[in-house]
Amino acid sequence: MRNHFAAEIERMAEVDPNIYVLTGDLGYGVWNRFAEKFPDRFINAGISEENMTAVAAGLALEGNTVYTYSIGNFPGMRCLEWIRNDICYHNANVKILAVGGGFSYGQLGMSHHATEDIAMMRALPNMRVYSPSDAKEAVLVARHVNKWKGPCYIRLGKGKEPEIYPKLVRCDVEKITQLEKGENIAVLAAGPIVGEAVKAHAILKESNINIGLFHVITIKPLDIETITSIAYTYKRILVLEEHTIIGGLGSAVAEQIAGLRGIKAAVEFMGLKDEYTSMVGSQEYLRDYYGISSRHIVEKVKKLEKEAER
Image 1 (cartoon, rainbow, N blue to C red):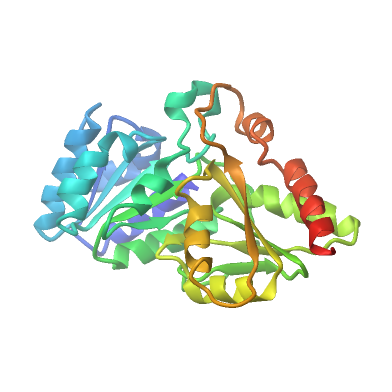
Image 2 (image 1 turned 90 degrees about the vertical axis):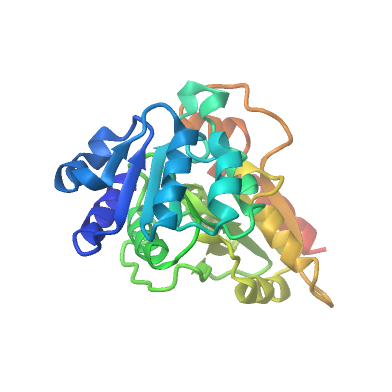
């Protein structure tokens, strides 16, 4: 995913001389070609992400489109005050690329588990938040945010994410994608964790349980029209996220549904509870340990299905 995103930025930089990339002493294999082609527009700020963010804001306020890049929590959460004061307050045209959302860097422990980032970025005025699920969507998001003149936070997978949309052709990444039609329960997810929901759907289908499956690429601004339609169509909405259940996609969905009148779907959450991750291991292992893997989704849906039938 990250390599495809970088390749698209490189392609756009060939025709746009105002595109800059700043990195915090990481991503050499990802940005080598960009740095070789455009040495004056590639800046390695060193292990100083806060300074990288301030420089990016300055470049953006001079009329450039600037991308900052690092892994996990470093370009976002570590730089929160600089993002708030320098980028968002001035509505600066900076795109923050955070590679390794959720448990992508699971073996490196809590400091590298990006599990509160969406909540923090959603709270910032002027900030837009995107979470593509696979490489094809990452390219579409790259094209989309490059046209948008303002702050964007893009949460990317580390790489080798399974392909969710083999034949995807889409222009509007701000619309929620319906992957599967269902009856009582709709499952909403954002980012590579969608792959777990796809697996769960296949298992549930063998038991004649058909769930609606939806992917949210743009978490902020949220596609309110589709959320409203889902809320009035299904009995339950299950929001799955590789993130804390506080302030993330689930909160964004619940905030919108809370304002609707009449009979509407109840919202359930699957994500990290109000706790720090104390375990280390592969992304697959941690997803299962913290209850957001496909088998946990199947168990939760079956429970909700019984409740919906009452």
